Length: 282
Image 1 (cartoon, rainbow, N blue to C red):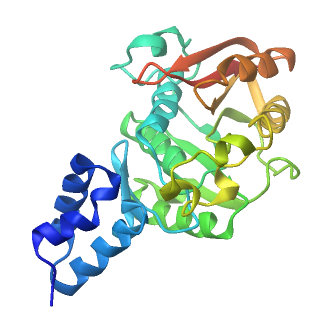
Image 2: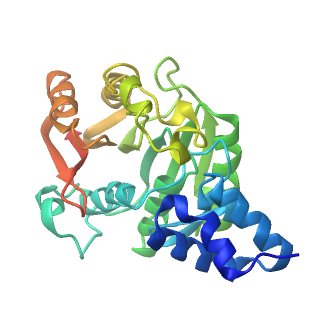
């Protein structure tokens, strides 16, 4: 026998009434009968809604997600916005994005890498933005996780406007130096949660999303020097490295980039006014 509305709501009370009502409404749009019961029970147990649905909207696309792959967040869209502003194709830029200088390029043969790509959401959304603006590109998406690599490949096939322009490789950016060629741009949303912060995360994140996509040592900064090394080796002159980080890590990441030789480093706030992306130029 299926649950009634009140019983379904009771199952979701743990996450707060407003969130429970929203989650229930979304689940009821996707499922009915026993399938709805099972979906609600999964959500009530703490499983993230995106894993139950199998997708998450991000920027202008809808990406497949599954256990083992980090769920895209709205805050990460600022990485795409920053990259498009750098390439001169973000006419709607506001706030800190207006401080990003434009790259001297006519959008022909833009070559970029999305490192620690996860679902591929940053790289694919950026590639689609370039295509929509009439540009051409080639892009490499890289991740250490087999699940992420497979998921990014699937998302390229379903969400990329020109899937033939993107490829995915398995690589640990901390130890491997992938053959990237010369790049106009590197974007990344690397792990940046400290060991201590991992213990404080909500259970739906800590217990369900992949540890390797979240945890980055005692300082949360384990990935930024490796990203800097790759940037110095592979960026063209004037090219940019853009990396997401925690809201309290902007100054530390900016210092790593500056001391490593990148120029005109700056930190961009997301739409919640939190320092979210730091970038520098070769």
